[in-house]
Image 1 (cartoon, rainbow, N blue to C red):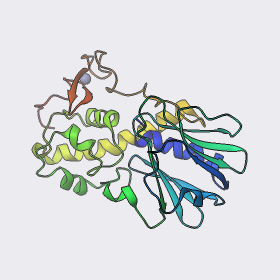
Image 2: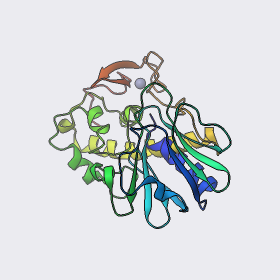
Image 3: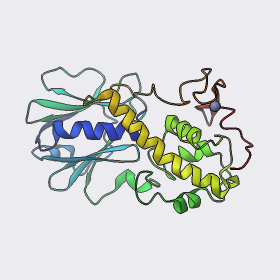
Length: 273
Ligand SMILES: [Zn+2]
């Protein structure tokens, strides 16, 4: 599932290909895809693509005259950019044809159709209204994080993936941020010391920024079809030795999600400091 770092790279790499192009056609190929009726998606036709942005795990395409298309790729979705002459596959959910003979397509392989789109006026937040703190924004202060954590009798892993609290982090990067912060995914948020909150506050943007640069190194100017994750510390590395201490990475299901962590580096009871 694409998370904040994947979408940041997608945004950067699509920008030189698509900005300034005008939409020549739209095609919705899955009945459940579009969550809005007005403005009509056909209103995108004739408008120029003015910019890409991201909020949480939503990918936003801005159009002239203050319209935007908000996409959520969900579990398996990805964005394809290429010649309009390629026939769309069965996995193509949505297609935006541009005036330079290229398409932007939302591709979702597999039997389920989970990806969603919203056409919104610029001042309408739509589903973005529900989102919590944006971890790479100036609003993500230690104080703001402390407020998110304070009094919550919930495990850290579940807090980090809750989009209403902190937006953009999913299963993989929650594990990574907690590893970098040396905090157990099972720790209850309300038990964190000031120093631990400060550690987590540094670890979240550090980890996400680092991941963006690692993905860029691997992709160059390309787009991904599958997330690039080979550099991660713990997520997807169950049974392999921790890159810091050599202890095998453990895996448990937490809230139905695969959670990977180092039982030594992220001990539940740690000496302070
Ligand atoms: Zn370790």
